[in-house]
Image (tube, rainbow, N blue to C red; front, side):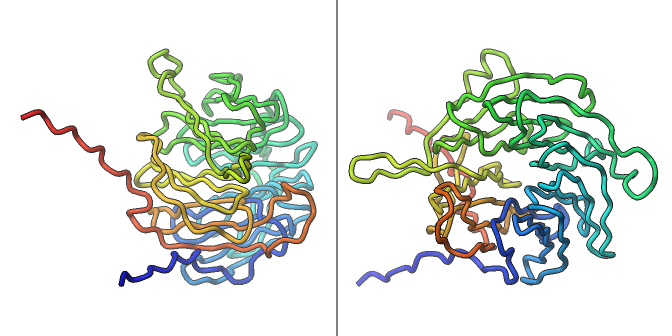
Length: 342
């Protein structure tokens, strides 16, 4: 008789989760601290290893994104149009400035020492956070975009901006006067998420229509031939293909493989180089709204949170799961070498 192996648990559920939809979550680069933004108007700081809430800041509107500055402070992007720095260890809020509409995305560039925000007012803004608590001017520049900003991602000095209308702008933070590249998404439907490869050679882009595109920055013909797209987060039911939005992409910091999360409640892990799925975790209670690997890739934070893709309806409570990552789930499998003829 063979032993029945129980399916792996979804991970440890964090206590004191947000009370409304989770817009993003991110691990610190220095510890297992986890920053979480929510439609309940809060940004919360957790110690994921200790399952402890370390701090919380209320905002004037839903918080649509957050990112770390250092281990005990971060930045928030809010629907009240304000960009804030949140200092948790002394419970202090600094206002960097504002946009003319909801602030959708925020990133901090360690390379440039700047905060970058993207808004539904169709602009990108760069800020110097050192001026936030004094009278110095914090706004470095405002850069018009072709449409509302939906997603941002940074690698080194490179910034990728994804907007409505399937536009992609690629910038060098050292020269923001105009994009290095202006592109159109290779996917036919609205962009949900963009994330740069950790090695800096390109980016992954997901859409509302169950697909991910793997793109390369190098515009040479040989490099562009390497780009591809693949279907994911879909199922067949009674002969019909049911397709789900892909809300989240997170790259593993050690192996460069990546996880995707969809409105089907599944998290898949992919080896982009070998074009293979490595792992699928057991289904989560609700849509996957956000994903983040810890700095060494040993933990994966999963936001199981309904994203209203089917309108207002009863749904499972919003929850954050932190799971330990097994190497077999994320390490690329070596390609088998053909056996030479005898």
